[in-house]
Image (cartoon, rainbow, N blue to C red; front, top):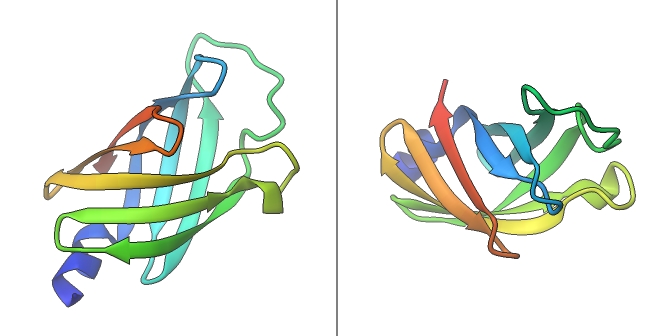
Length: 111
């Protein structure tokens, strides 16, 4: 388990799509049992989404050497923000790919 923790811990950045389909930049920070998710406006898009630029709590539900399952708890920050689970797979030591519960995809690289 220690190997799995060290593989996922740290700061990850990447992209996903909002429920409306617009792209969004992601910063995911994972510690031992949780972390934060921060959504930022994608370059070239203008939006009034109040869920952007906020640290959203993330809880690690389970992890193996190559897979991480987390709960994103946006409703604890602001009602209506992302409240999903995500399953992310470690593609290599620096890349995570996965899907949200609703089927949207995410791709992140370790910083």
